[in-house]
Image 1 (cartoon, one colour):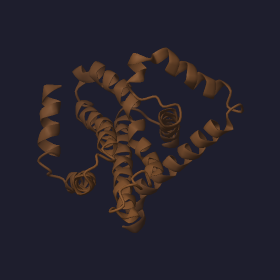
Image 2 (cartoon, rainbow, N blue to C red; image 1 turned 90 degrees about the vertical axis):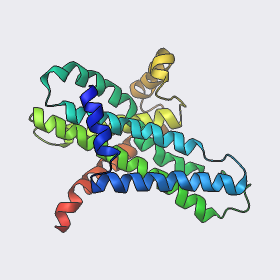
Image 3 (cartoon, rainbow, N blue to C red; image 1 turned 180 degrees about the vertical axis):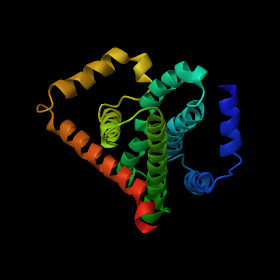
Image 4 (cartoon, helix red, strand yellow; image 1 turned 90 degrees about the horizontal axis):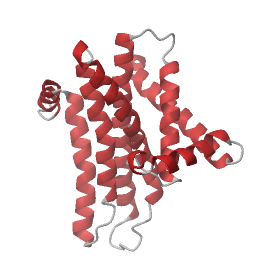
Length: 230
């Protein structure tokens, strides 16, 4: 585990790969926009976006570590534990897309034009989406290297459905990842209500279905885009 962490910090924070440099620059841009806005207005508005982005970065960090550990037979128990933690945190990456709902929350800051807030929130949503896509890709590669799946959708759609469920639970039921530890029974009860009675809450069922399809299409499109234009 220690060697994996040393590898990760050495690779990611040294910014050796072009993807790491672009992703780091994009994240710094988002954080900088929030800090600049708060300094300019004297208000601590939208700081939650930085926290949400950190929560989105965690599953990316976990999947990077898992990708490195997969070749080490002794690391199998660690991989299983990390997989469970990854599943708990991965919805946080796509949850940031719904932060677009907050456009207009800073309407009292008259000196800040709406286009600035739009660009700022979009940048966070984009970074969350990138972190999610890259993280899911790590796990897909691990499965591809260790198992034989007849079709990629057998892995991809269930994962994206769980992500959509997590987004709904976070945005509308107002649970977060930590509630899996601090309030698991209430969390499971509310999720069970949604799953057992899908027609009783068409809003929940519709949102989860639409988001699962959308996330699947985004993932497949970005994955195959480079091949399409090469």
